Amino acid sequence: MNKKQNKHKKPAVWQRHRIEKGPHLEILQARFDWLKHPRNHKEMKRLVLEANDWVNVVATTPGNEIVVVRQYRFGIGKITTEIPGGMVDHGEDSRAAAIRELKEETGYTCANWIYLGSVEPNPAILNNVCHSWHAKDAVQTGEMHPDEGEDIVVATLTLDEVRYEIKEGNFRHSLALLALTKVFNLWNGTL
Image 1 (cartoon, helix red, strand yellow):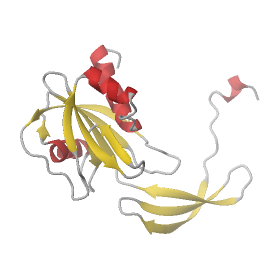
Image 2: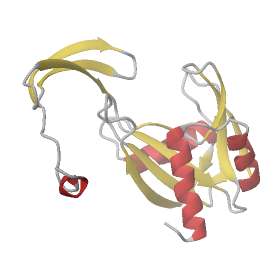
Image 3: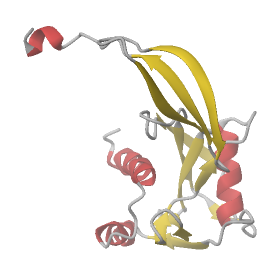
Image 4: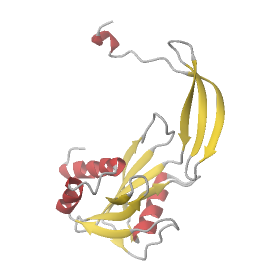
């Protein structure tokens, strides 16, 4: 079969035969799915990390500065520059989570929210989606209230300063970069 014939062909769905609970990992629940491989019919054990949906917020001030958070990230063992974000609580919609996370992490609030869409962070092992929101004309109206495990510094950066943070490797969170790109495209009229 040539490439043209494959254009619309889809792989077969793997049939799940059983689910085995794995360890609870604080913000994730591991599970193991036993699936039948559609090509060779072998039963294979695959890891799935069950997680709440996530939100990322690109908050821009009336002066078009971008609200960023700086914090120590355990996975890479260093301080990063990112945008506010976090988990969507059970029963909460992504907009409410974005409003809550922005206020908790930065003390900023906003009346003008634009939904930027959602992506699957890593569909190979994660079952959740990450929603991105633009908080346009956000203003600092109160104190920040980070979670017990968070130590955050809030700043506002110009577009050139954000580009510098990216160039220097301080801003590398892939989901946050994607959300920023969507806002930059809105500003340029290309989204």
